Image: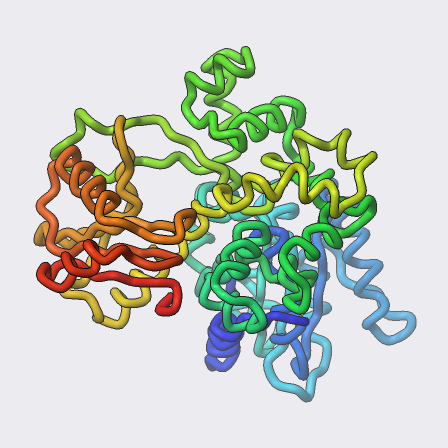
Amino acid sequence: MAFKRNLELKTLQNYYNREDNQIVVLYGDRYSGRESLLRDFLKGKDHFYYHARSCSEDEQLKLWADELKDDLPKGTEPGEGFSGIMSTIISRPSEEGKRVIVVDEFQNIIKSGNEFMEVVVRGAHNKLGDQPVMFLLCSSSVYWIENLMVEKLKELAFEISGLIRLNDLKFLDFTRNFKNYELESSVEAYSIIGGSPMLWEMWDDRHTVAENVCRLVLKDGAPLNEYGKHILPSELREPPVYNTILATLAQGKNKLNDIYKYTGYSRAKISVYIKNLIELEIVEKIDSVNTAGHENVQKGIYRITDPFVRFWFKYIFRNYSKLLLTPPDKFYSKYIAPTFKSYTAYCFTDVCAEYLDILNHMDKLSFRYNQRGVWVGKVGTIDTVATDDNGRTLVALCNWENPVMNYEDYEWLMFCVKQAKLDVNDIYLFSAGDFDLELQQEAMINEHIRLIDGTQL
C-alpha cells in the first residue's frame, strides 16, 4: 500500500504551475517517503533526475555526464562542468511544457563548493536556455538543510523559491489508513512505526500488532530486523557510543547524570553525542514549559523521539542474543508483552496532544493557544500545558494504562498545577477507558473540565 502525501503534492504542483522558473528544496529524513512523492509528482511531466553521490566534484561530474548520455541522441556529448551539463539538460527540445530538473541529495554537491548552485540560479534566470524549468533540489539531511544550508549558500539562498519539509504523518492519518484497528491497536502500532510512510507500507492491519512485530521485526532477515541492525546513519562515528546512550535512554535513564552513572562516559562526552542525536532528530531534550513554579521543575530530560529507534533499543537491542535462539512469538510473549502497555503510554499522550491541536486549529476550544508543551516537575508531570498571549491556560492529563481514570487522578493533576503555579482556564482529562462516577459528577458541576474517552478519540 502506498501512502500519498497529497498536501505536499499539491504544494509542488502549485510551484510547477507558476509562470516563472522555480528553485524548490524538498527535504525529509530517509524514511519520509520522498521517492514515492517524487514519482507521483513527476508522472506525465518532462523531467530529468540525478541522484548525487558523496564523492569528489570530478567524479560527480563524470557520473552525471555518463547518466546524461543515455538521454541524448547517439553521438552527442554533454557539455563540460556543471554549467555544460545543465545547459545540455535545459536546451533539450520539449513538447511537454515546463521541465523539472531533480537533483537528489544535492547537499553532496554543495558541500564541496557553490559552483553548482550558481549554475542552478543562472538556469532559473534563463541564462542557460529559454526552456521553462523547475529545479527541485532534494535532501534527506534535515539538519543540514535547516541549520547549515543558508550559511553555506550565503546570498544564493535568497534565490530559493520555497522549502518543503516532509514531516512524519500524524496519528489521524494513521487511523484513516489502517481502518481495521481500534484505538488500542492504532496507538500500539503508531508507537512502533510512528509516522513514517515507508514503514507504514510494510505494516498490515489485517494482522494484530503482535503478529506484525513477529513478521517484520523478530524474524531474522525480516525488513525491520535488517533496518534495526543499521538504524544509525552511516555518517556517525563511534556507533558503540551512540548505541550505548540510546540503550540507556530506552531503559528510562533520561537525565544526564543518570546516563553518566550508568555508562561511565564523561558528562562532556555524553553531551556531545546527545547533541548529535538531537541534530539528527533521533533524540529530543524535553524543556518544561516556563511557569511561575520554576523551582519545582526537573531539568535536563532527554527522550528518544524516533518511535522505531525507541522500540528497537527498548526491546530488541538489549535482548538480541535471546532473539537469535527464540521463536518470534515466544520472544514477543516473554520480552515485549509484559511491559508493552506501559511502553505505549507515551504515544497516547502524543495522540491526545494531537487531538487538542486539531480542536485548536478548528477554534473548538474556549481560546486559541499558540504555545503547547509539557511540564515536568520534580514530583509529577502535566502531560499538556497550552497557553495564549493573554496567559489563558489549558492543562491535560492522559490515562492509558488503567481501565478507569478516577477522581484521585484529577486531584493529582491539581496538585501538579499548584506546584507549577498555574492559573488554569480549562482542564482536559483523557482516558482510553472510562471515568469513575465521582469524576463524572465533578465534570457536570465544573464547566472547566472536559472528559474525553477512547470513543471520541
